[in-house]
Image 1 (cartoon, rainbow, N blue to C red):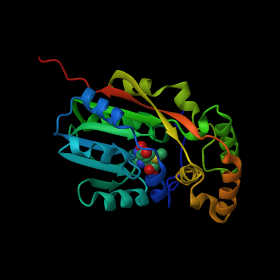
Image 2 (image 1 turned 90 degrees about the horizontal axis):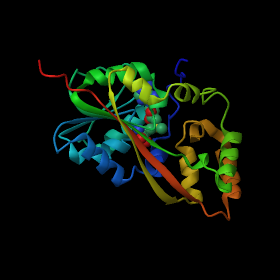
Image 3 (image 1 turned 135 degrees about the vertical axis):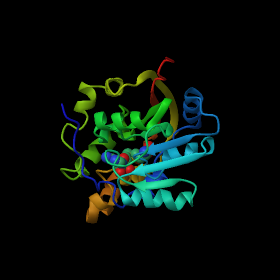
Image 4 (image 1 turned 45 degrees about the horizontal axis):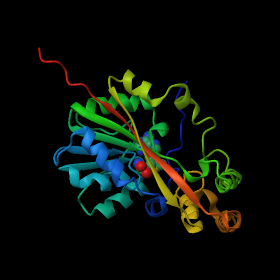
Length: 262
Ligand SMILES: C[S@@+](CC[C@H](N)C(=O)[O-])C[C@H]1O[C@@H](n2cnc3c(N)ncnc32)[C@H](O)[C@@H]1O
């Protein structure tokens, strides 16, 4: 089953909401990932499909050089302005960006691998990594995907307002049929496990509205003139609920093997 094709402009105009309202990866996850990869204050990180640089900024101090690549120019411009020169930000698709072989110590892809042509990108990342280097796929649960009554109500509101066609039909089926770890193994990686960091979070109505605007299906651009009505309905839906979620932050780690000495 082929990976789904997404439009390339789904996050247009969403960078400021994305940067402000996405809950950051917890420091415990970042520290654990750095420890497992063996990074010690040198080397080169690539934050691929970086958005506004959620991983790049969290890890920049641990690397001599940080590169951040995203196909959406708005996202890259936002990250570049925030980095003020400290991060090399490039607007390009993961499937097309031109990077040197064996130049990277860690490639991290946050909440985005399902949007990429997974086999092609895993193969490219394998080439870009030095032997012993790592690929990490970071994930976090979205607030509307749980079973609490407010989460079900939120999911129903999101469904009602997402314009048709923005999210490809059956977008999650290829990943379910062939899990990421199989894709990584097929590219030559050795899988080193999934590491989970459940983190309690209390949302506010403002936070969930901002989260909605950070999504590809419900950005201010996607909602257009309907945004004000959407906000009112969302507030009516959520008022009176304790908006508590334990967000499952996790990463899947894979390593490029070091060839045996001859
Ligand atoms: C949900 S956001 C994730 C942003 C950030 N990595 C994070 O962890 O929060 C998905 C990002 O993937 C980017 N993206 C989607 N397809 C891409 C591709 N083929 N090449 C590069 N970036 C891509 C989008 O532009 C968007 O910024």
